[in-house]
Image (cartoon, rainbow, N blue to C red):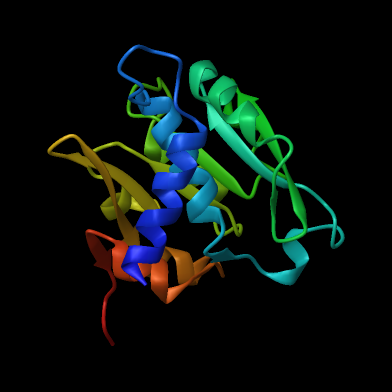
Amino acid sequence: MKKIFICIVLLALLGFAPAHSNNLPDINQVRTAYLFNVAKFISWPENSFDNDSAPLVIGIVEQPELAASLSVLQDKKIRQHPIEIRDLSSLNSVTGCHIIYLSDQSRITPDSLFDKVGNRAILTIGDDKSFAREGGILQFVTIRGRLRFIVNLDVAKRQQISIDSQLLALALEVIEVRK
């Protein structure tokens, strides 16, 4: 299963490769591929969408370059849901988002995001060094030049977000308190 996911990510990256002479994708293109592929392995509660064809909304906080990179996803779908990208300049418009990405470069803190999201079924993704431990669901981590991720399964469950076991198997770490 790990090989399948890696192939999907690699194929996605090839589609997002820039026209640079070395043809290596930049970090926003890699994040775009990860966000798209991660979303395929997430299930939200039924009431998260107004109807079967309602958009899956990805909110990007204070990262216009990443939001622009994500525009390549505008014609794609996750299951039957078309993808909609929102460039968020504040946390006032988190309602309606299914995924929110917060960069460690943002002036908005992870705690502010977690307070605003509350227990809503929103997949929070960030790359702050303690994002997952402090209450985010998925944290991007760069190790030896490769983007990896940590999952906080406890927060996901509390927010009624289901993460496919195939995705969990690829995580660098899964945070879960066993009871």
